[in-house]
Length: 319
Image (cartoon, rainbow, N blue to C red; front, side, top):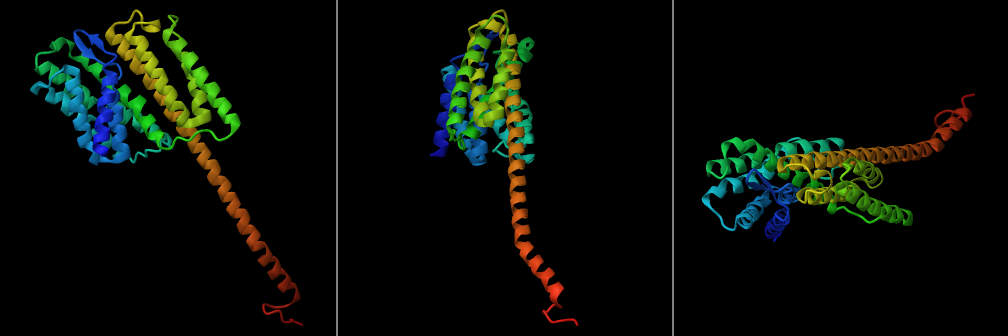
């Protein structure tokens, strides 16, 4: 059942990714490819045994993208399957924890899981196009860069959201509800303005991101990163706002840089706050334990002092 569920999620996320395509020198690429994030998230949550679901989902996604499946698509299929597996293996090798509660976990997810892991899918996919005569050799690196950027964005945007979804909890106190609602409204307004305004104000999303990360950690910053990514991709593919005069390659790379910065800021700030809160809780617990220990020892110490004043160890007089 898990295999079927992951395969369906991979396929559906692929269909969503194909809604926003960009033509780069005659080759069609997606600036955001969610299946890579779904695949890596599934591996981190369910383990390596789920890889057949990724292969099945990739097969369906490749078929949906081209309308048919040819032998030349085997390289694309292999890349889409191996890339998340390589990223998963690299993260496991360095002791990655899916709770994302440590600073190092955020760094390794970005640089090993996304930037390094997705080199596999971009390279195999572009080589497949090259060897099947669907891509001129002079355009190899341009298409490769766009392919890699789309896969990286899928990991950066989707994987943290999946990892935090299982432990998401609604705010309990009334004041937190008010703040969370205000944050949601401000996030939507600022992000729409930043991605649609021709004044190139994409940087205005970062103060809101800092607010979300500091106050709500990853459960607050991960959905906001998704919002920024989706609206930025919509603006980019529509050539609206700051993306109006950019070429397909420039737009894709700008989106990758934006989403990389947003996700890295989200993960690192959230991890720092979580680590700080953990240290505070552990310190408070240690202080409580120490206070309890002192309280237990105090009567015994007082009894010993009184025994020393009135007599020897057995209470007998020394006179």
